[in-house]
Image (cartoon, rainbow, N blue to C red; front, side, top):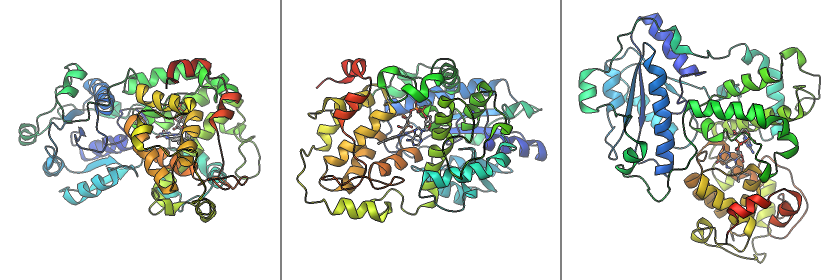
Length: 458
Ligand SMILES: Cc1cc2nc3c(=O)[nH]c(=O)nc-3n(C[C@H](O)[C@H](O)[C@H](O)COP(=O)(O)OP(=O)(O)OC[C@H]3O[C@@H](n4cnc5c(N)ncnc54)[C@H](O)[C@@H]3O)c2cc1C
């Protein structure tokens, strides 16, 4: 388990269960966490470990052996998978196109002594089937509208582990001896304190794991979805789902969220309307809140996986559309109002109280409101002499502090700030025709009084 870190609605786990039954072999579920991945901190490790505890609990009542392993020193886990694979008939793992995971998968593939399969359990439409990069959300939406029906017919099982019959799975002795399973029943802060991770980014009160993820989803459906279309942009109204950390760590599946929203909406495929291919409205025929939410979950989020997979060098400035690079470069010599250092940005020490509030929310809570992230990114662009630096700065800050950072969705949005997946707007200083957003207009348009009181310190 490397990215779909859950026991429910998980295609990779389901595949492993199928093979276990077919080959009549026991199933061992290894969930290992390195200690030296970029941005490893108390915050990220705590969230991961809380998720592992949920998985341990969920596996305890199944016939599978759950094997949690936390590295205590860099490189300590090296060789674990290779050795384990010598005892195995087959290895199944997750497929995820971002962060260090593609490199880790390549290494695992070359080290595994047996067949290794990587399964895409990220979204409703497997990324391999996209066939190409989609430069616009409209184009990707048209693909969803054309193909989703078939994919819904192949929904993952809610509880794949329930299919396993015989117990008796265990971690082979030689493996368990060299890489002892981590005892997760100690207090999480105690576990994390002993690890060489960045202790300056503290844990936050948002708890990781599939159980909290389920509670967050139920709260969203009961209390927020109906307001999502009208008030989703207002930080004070707090009515977005806050599911992004759970999606990022795979503690909840897009399928589960989709099924819950659609059950709530009493939707069946018969409701689908006839619209021009790629139109946002009139296709799902659900409530306005659900319509907007589904567009984020099934179009924008999955477009991000498309971009991370199908666009070569997608992190780079060079991957922006030609019009965006041309317009930004034609304004390289425009005077900037301010140029802040990364350290000043990190410490939320700018003269812009709205921006500082967004950065403080990130630092304090490990999450940031969606509309505030847009303003946050646009101001970083304005405060950089070179637009390519803006991409690096967004990644440095968001990936460090946000639980949901380091995700395909992160990189889609850093690039969106610089014009990717968008169209040219009106000519302005510094940003040219790239969409322009200001803290002043956000403050005028949105309800954010309480938000600024809480986070807007200078
Ligand atoms: C500069 C910038 C940086 C961002 N960095 C990240 C990041 O690191 N990680 C991250 O998950 N999101 C990021 N976003 C996208 C978005 O702001 C968050 O996904 C959203 O605010 C998460 O809150 P939520 O779960 O309540 O979202 P909801 O509004 O409830 O949306 C539900 C889900 O849809 C997806 N989604 C929502 N907005 C977008 C979007 N704009 N693009 C793609 N998918 C979307 C997410 O998976 C989200 O969890 C960023 C946006 C900007 C402008």
